[in-house]
Length: 170
Image (cartoon, rainbow, N blue to C red):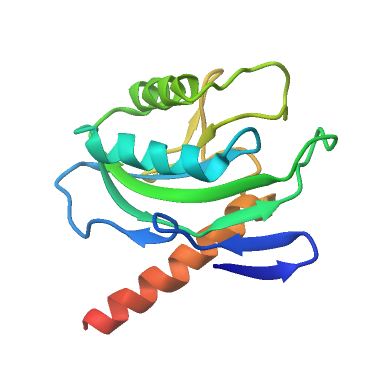
């Protein structure tokens, strides 16, 4: 199913996006990931990522957003992107978590040719608990997240539906 938001923004609803996975986890840190891609069968890549994360004992999946098809920014001479949000929990520290996500990007064929280049899978750490980190390799919260429709729209969907579900449980 899809829902057109504007001329160049469309939400896609699939079996894994949006989805609520777990309510409770004893893991320490709440993490918000932004995922994106525009090379290959992006929906299939995202589904395989979900499967990998579910099987990986270091993570507990909580929830995903619908996928947003949106135009690229920065380098605009490329195909539209699909973007989504994944909420999960982990006990890994931020730098170890970053390395784990980079291994997943590589597993799915990510090549780093230039900034804003086309890619099979991009995984951004938007938030890591309430931590603020600003190092050469890691900036949390993710730089410019609040100015990106590719983050804001899926995040808003999760927030609205998560709050609705919480209120219905009362």
